[in-house]
Image (cartoon, rainbow, N blue to C red):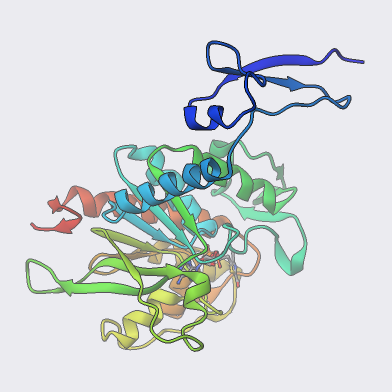
Length: 322
Ligand code: AHZ
């Protein structure tokens, strides 16, 4: 039997220490004794419910406050959006990168391969990105196979979340785009309109529940192909009159689809870069089914595009001014 490990922790909210029974576990330096004992005497440092609430609230709302103006907003944390965030966050640690994901679970469709099977197929040369991430794979010649799609997604997600300049807000839907005239009098996507997803899903059952906004000089849209929330920006560009009509995703052809997505990754309208399968709806290109290399390469290209836009414009308070 391992001996119990007695440790101690600083307890910096003095009002909570006052609520402890006199001298209960607190020494004269304001340090609380804890005990890691799996034989029945495990003891945690005390806590008050309000401390838990405040610990979350102050960090979350500080993030919202700070990110009300971001450098880049990435809409959608699927394989394309996360690949974009990784490359951008690594290449430009100076940028405030804010990822908005409608689902509670980030990762989009990249928790599984095809037909709910676990292995993930990636065509070369996109295997280089897996090597950079440190994700192991079987080499099958022209393509590689990761033993479980979740290994890719959990690895990239953890690396992205470790980056101090990246914030992820999940369960948060982009409901609309901010579109206004730029310094040339041209229509420009200049931010996103957000709401908690649970609110966004209930606009038909409740009267007016107004949204919130994030201003940014560059938006990367990575919302996937058409679905309950998919292809969001592509559809909104049509209804806003910035795109004549949707191209609509074409039938499956792996060999045509993957290069079309990567090569077509671009700033589709001023201020809005599109990546991943959303592009198939915008451009009318084929789907590739369960091969993920194009999502990774498209995300990296979107990050390079975002850097190009930022490096060629002057930005003041999240707005392009020259
Ligand atoms: O929840 C969506 C998902 O996680 C999120 N999303 C969509 N609309 C949103 C909105 N606000 C915030 N309005 C939103 N988030 O975007 C994410 C899209 O991830 P995805 O995995 O669906 O798209 P992807 O382009 O990153 O990867 C596509 C993977 C596919 S689909 C496919 C085929 O059907 O042939 N093949 C591949 C490789």
